[in-house]
Image (cartoon, rainbow, N blue to C red; front, side, top):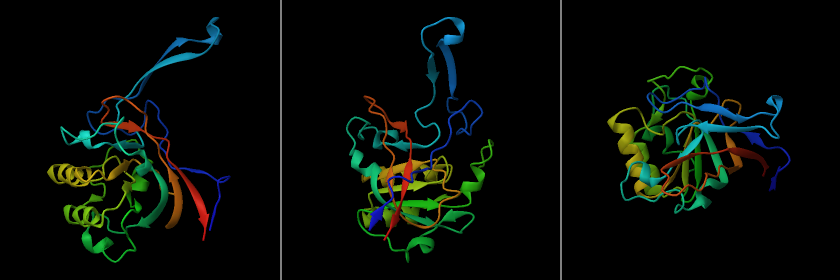
Length: 215
């Protein structure tokens, strides 16, 4: 097996003022504190953004009041060999969509869905594809390492989505949301998606990279 370290594929969303946001989340803002063009010695900006902006991870504390925060999570969940599966179901990732897939304990699983097309738009879509409760329980029982998806939430909007988070985060399964998988084919990759080390943090933007593998 060979990992092509010289061919990184950036699957992160570009952060900018007009990007896609979860409804009512803080939007990205940048204020220039100093600019060379205005006679300063360096360019320096101050940024404001929500901790779940763009491509990001969730920590257990996001949905569990006594869950681990960013400085305490196992960051090894956010790098390693990953399996990308394309799910054709246009509504939800159901148990029957994944129970025959080669998913094993300790896997990093990334789901590519119709969401990858939706991410190209700066309009939030309520009908994005999320992981169903039954599928979440199945993956939790499998004891996978991490689950990623190509929209801003791993679960459907509403109560079901919140429960999906609790099921996965209750077992400290890593969650990566907002992956840009539009140009990614099914298969195995090596992934890196490391969060910031923020004390007490419940989530963090990440720079998610996939490296092709030759088996």
